[in-house]
Image (cartoon, rainbow, N blue to C red; front, side, top):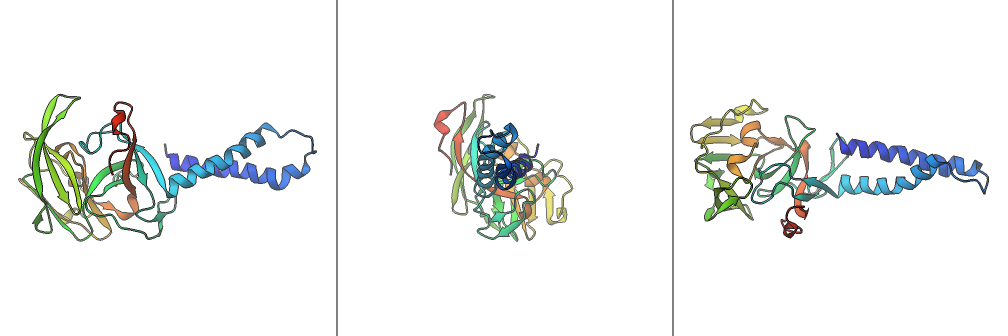
Length: 262
């Protein structure tokens, strides 16, 4: 379900009821007459729905993490907030940018519409910017010929399935974050899709190299061997960007996670 579209329709409907009552019906009713139920409910809900619509469209939007592709940064069940303003003001529903603010940077955790099915929202980390040459060779990330610094830390225990992943701290741009690798996972990309600008990528037995086209971004999950991302389905166009994730506001299973992540 397209919640943004539903909210927009509700805003228009309740706004029309409010406007009709304020400018027309109220003047025709006797002073002691009670408002019809449809006017009472429609007009009273309108300001609330309008405020929610504006906040969700232009400032912040809540999301729930459905998969483990961003472990250990984000866990399944985390409820996060996404800054809708930081990458520019966009018209709701059509997602058309009308005011430029900032551009995504390497290391940002970004929510976007999945290019192959824009009705789905995905969340990944920005790895490559327009014009970058992104290489992933033997599970090491190389940007424009420079290997991204990593340092090994203690292994990560997946509590749901009771197995360990190798854990590293990676410095991508100005951002330090943790990533996971599984020793028994292949280094090559199995079955990459046919996607726009597929010719910009060269896959081989040790990984791949991709040149990011103008107006597009290359994204990867922090759980590197358990993430369906740009390695498989290609680049994220600018018009698919939703916003920058910045805060965990709730997690039913672990209240200590509230307020973490940035």
